[in-house]
Image 1 (cartoon, rainbow, N blue to C red):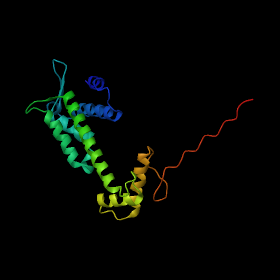
Image 2: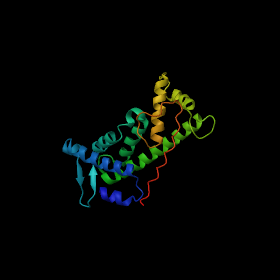
Image 3: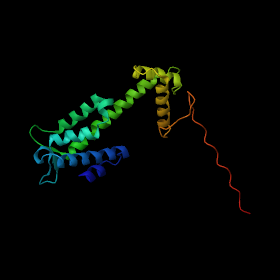
Image 4: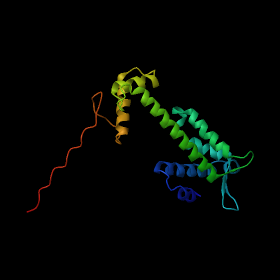
Length: 193
């Protein structure tokens, strides 16, 4: 079943493929870690695999648990997507469940990107396409009003900067408005005579 889904999605991103695998693994784990009837994954005569509603909900909670504290409404939408596949009193096709959850996750990611773009645009006061530390602090103050320490916003700024440059979230440039450093040019190698 997993191979059919992965082969059918030629443009699936690595992150999405990993989520697909995690969903199947979570469905299987839920099936074998609870009572047989409550969450069984059953192979039907036509080769489809069905999954009980309880197993689907457990898989959603496992795979999307990080949403619980950051975006609880997104977790509820993912749970609703899994429930939408279920017919009352019947198990659902596991492949259809995974396909539906992947589609719902794409929609959630698109909504989060739009929200982030709107926040960025609102915070980019001078319209230069970059957030200075001062602009970032203003946005951070709106999004995390209970945090008053400048060190927290500086840490968040450095983390965002490091991630945007593809780096780690380790210590960044200590200046309040870090700029990317130019890469040093490689030294010419001496030519053999």
